[in-house]
Amino acid sequence: MIANLRTLSVLGTLAMLAACQQGVRPNMEASEPFALSSEEAALMEQLPPADNPAPIGGFPSAPANGHGDDVFARIKRNLSTQSCSTDSSSKRWRQSYAGDPVAFANHLERILPLIDFVSSEVERSGLPAEFVFIPLVESWYKPDAIGHGGPAGMWQMISSTARNHGIHIKPGYDGRLSPVESTRSALSYLKTLQGMFGGWEAIVMAYNAGEGRMMGAFRRSSNRDVSAANRKPHGLSNTTYDYVAKLQALSCLIAEPGKQGLRLPLSARFIPLAPVLVDPEVKTLDQFAASHGQDAIELRRLNPGYKGGRIVAGVPRLVLMPIAAQGAPAAAAASATVAAPPATVAESANPTSASPHQVQKPVP
Image 1: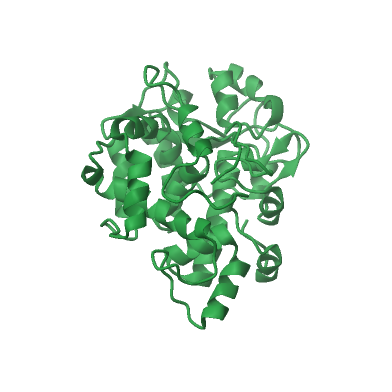
Image 2: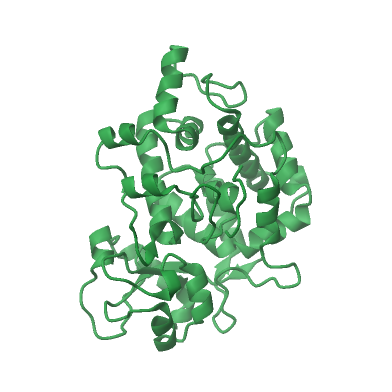
């Protein structure tokens, strides 16, 4: 898996896709079969301790209007299959992730606000809910994750692939570390792969190995049979086949938690997160936080793409923040995000003028 992890626009044309020859994926070597790597285990340990259950995005003064049962119900209804895979590798990966069911449930609860945000984006994109677990496999949903060799963010993108997919990377800003920009870019790429390869297993293989390698494997096989359990198409790395098995295992843990003795944090309450378009007069996250009653440290933690908390010119100005902390009920704020049209990259980088320090409504 990810080696030595220390801290945790779709392509314009298919020609660009082919030229890229690799997907939004970690720069990694084949992982040890059926065992979490030391780096993956370390990521879990870096989450808040069990005696400090405050989730990512948690602001004590704001009402916790998000519901764990809603998040897991959304994921379950959008899974490609509602039953667990009988493949032995999927079973063993379930044991690897949730061998300690209580610890695994605690980890899920602490990253629930980010899972809620990503699962909503996945659902809106019309993609299978299996893709919700990619950031978990890659980084345990750490926005500031940096991997050996350069991959960064929750989705562990390498810089060349990120730039090819429209992500802004410039002095003072790295969009790979923005949960909003990186998630929307990754999902755009997955949507493109869906049009190229069809089923979710093939999409994930192409995402992990690169669409060029996937096409080559199909050519060598003289068919388009796909089965990670049977190592089809032949010629991909064990890492790629295991990648599918990991997503199958995590999907199973949500669809049928009882099979692993797991109790999902259905009763957990949290403050939902939403991207907010920030006024152009605002130059730093601290300035934004001070003028809107936010916790500056927490806001920077959620938006590490802005280096040093500075919002430089020419980059998207979408800040991920707890919507309930704006003073509006979480449900009302969430409904507002659905009603408004999505902001384009240009709009988010150059928002329309507004009164100084005025925050635009949440942007879907």
